[in-house]
Picture 1 (cartoon, helix red, strand yellow):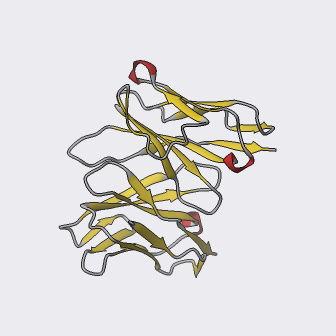
Picture 2 (cartoon, helix red, strand yellow):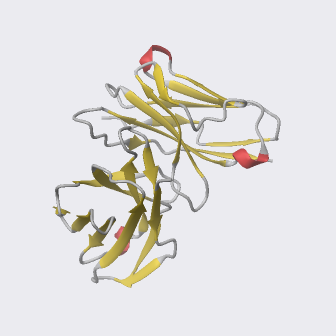
Length: 112
Length: 115
């Protein structure tokens, strides 16, 4: 069955450093992949979408890569700030449908 | 522009009681989703609507869960009777389906506690 894996352990980094989060998937080949941010007590907020023919996508301090051979996406936050502390979720559409599977999310904490 | 509105934000009920959640999507969004999110997990799809039609309800426990989206706008999700395992956050999301890619806009969720 289709599966997404994100590091369930929290990631703590120092302010100003680059945070790198990983999303691995198995048993399918999505046409695109999305990253969301979720703060406690709130719904997820869309950040970036990257298509299978795009190797890299950037938005301000965010960068996403998509390696369809490795079946992996990396999400980077450069010059991280305490305000970046949140849980980050990756999501993929299952083949031929609009049914999205979400990863469990990785909790990021940026230390001042 | 107003976002996705959900109510109530919190609900505490005893098991075997009924409960209902309401969602008003972003104006003009034809697609509406209901998700359930357990603590420490990602959202799991319960049902997806395109306009008034439920196009994917394979994950909806139909013995106790029901949903409707009358007139293709707002939607209600109901649980009857609730069980202890239904305690979770119920998220509603909406999107405008264009070019085969859907950016989903989520509401704040309804946190349900079944005692």
